[in-house]
Length: 123
Image (tube, rainbow, N blue to C red; front, side, top):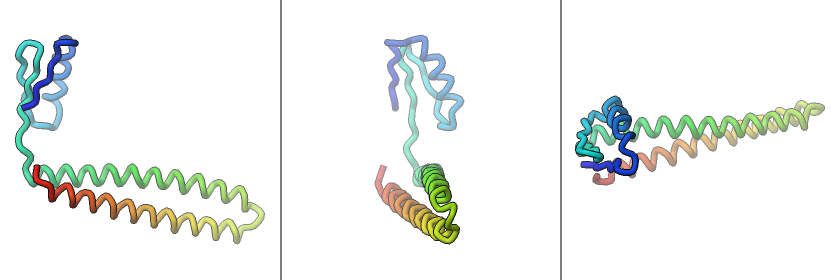
C-alpha cells in the first residue's frame, strides 16, 4: 500500500487520481480526505520479466542513439579534415564504425548482465 499525502496541495489530488487510474498500472486509488491510497499488487515473476525486457529495449535504444550521434560527429569531422585524402577518410570512417559497433555490443552485454541480476533478486 502506497500512501500519497496531498495536504500541501489538495487541488492536485484529483489530477493524480485520474492519472493513476488511466495508467497501465492496473491499480485503483482510494481517496480519504487529502490522502490518496494506492494498493500495489505484489510483483510477479512474469511482470518483473516484462518490465526488465521493456527497460532493456528502451535503455538500449537510447544508448545506440547516443553512440550514433558520437559516430556522426566524428565522421563529419574526419570527412572535413581528410577531404583531400579520400583513402585516409575511408580508413578513419572504418575505424569509427568498428568502434561504434564495439560500443554497441559492450552496451548490450552490460544491459543484459544487469537485467539478469535484477531478475535473480527476490522482490
